[in-house]
Image 1 (cartoon, helix red, strand yellow):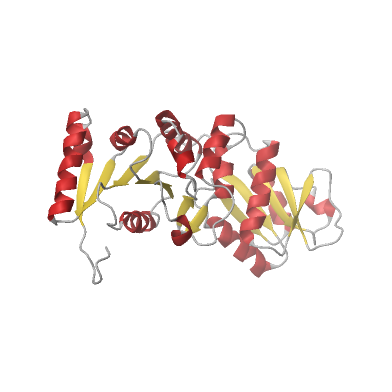
Image 2 (tube, rainbow, N blue to C red):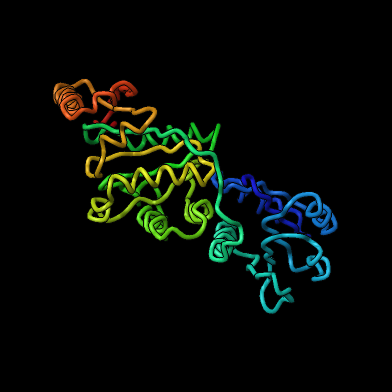
Length: 308
């Protein structure tokens, strides 16, 4: 039932506006965010449309907040004691916006008050793969993702054995792609909310931190990867998933087959061309020649210093 309504109501206008803008940067969130300063306006809105989440400041009287019809209610508290209604939960106001959002989504997910998402099935998988090492594949994938994210919600997933995650996503902590796969196996809760709570973002592009341990990556079955992509398209607003693919994942060729477009990076030196030819022959011999039909080969020029 996307988009759902997320109402923010706070007397501090600039604070509320900044909070709304920070929430909107999470493109896969699946909520339409509405901002009010007068509680009377929020009450009137809730009589006309269903409100799934209300986030209100503690400055409003409980009698005012009570009149807003919402499935989930959260109150921005400034510290110390605050008067809450039975159906309200407290969220500390003066913390990072991502922490506020994560706390709300985690509570809503555990209570399952929002129900499962019903986003449109299907979407576009874009695979980035090369049999040639040190060719700038991840940089290409991230640049493509950032550009595509200007037009639509995009999720970047790194499926390499050595992703270099700390380089591309410095300071990223908490859940990673392995945790997301585990969550899906449990078959409980709302996947859209879970991803929104754990996704990071760089320049408009959402991403899930890579699996840090190579053995854990190896253990993921082909069907689990394919099931993950289907679940994301079915339960989230992402219309495009960009896959940064390495050689160690199970079902690599099958995943490449499922992609609408595969970008294969190469250089025109003799060794690189020999590897590209061997990869192409492997596709033919293993029955995956059709991958070449939706492959775009991208020639990479070396910059000064020898790095792509």
